[in-house]
Length: 222
Image 1 (cartoon, rainbow, N blue to C red):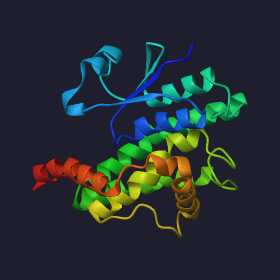
Image 2: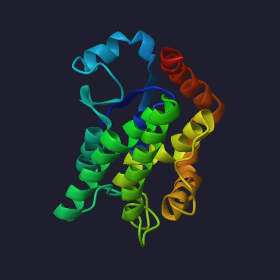
Image 3: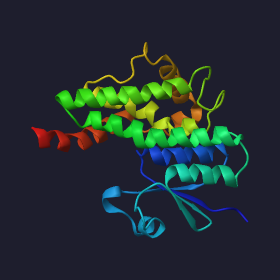
């Protein structure tokens, strides 16, 4: 009996893309259900009544929520092409840094995007400080997982897509190639991978989306 896999996500969410990439790496077939976050479907509310957000992986009728949790579920369920390191310490460190990306790096970048003036300068400095921690993780490696894309690459994948867009919209600079040569090279390697390119959100639409997200914050301080 074939397994039923569904992914509830939006076209632009980097967190939903984590799930897509993991399933593709495992060679799994799945159905995509695109959600409108402003008009959440009954299906999404049924499958994720606690947080009411995407992504949700539905495996044979059972929902799994939160993208990093989903990545681990996929890796535990389908053993081919492992995503997480095998050693317990390395696995713990991968989880630690993935959480750091979601709870420290991403919020600091977003804060810089939606602020202005002195506040923005402080937010950019915080974001750059966080990115320096990420730079250290890439020493001696092509990807965070080594020679191939792994769990931590998928967790940090949003950086390759979103940081340059944020820089363009807000006219700021997070990633100077001289200061962050390893992240810059990783972005090139990650972005060039055929699997990643296949699902890359259109840049023009992403610019439009993030610009629209930023504008209400700027009006509050105008």
